[in-house]
Length: 33
Image (cartoon, rainbow, N blue to C red; front, side, top):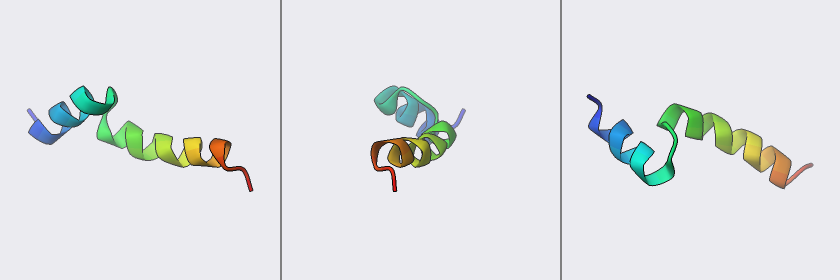
């Protein structure tokens, strides 16, 4: 198993790939241009 993904998911509650995608969407929604 991927240890980084396991620890990351435990800390943030989502997988790294979803986090990277999510941050872009969240930033766009939180700070609309």
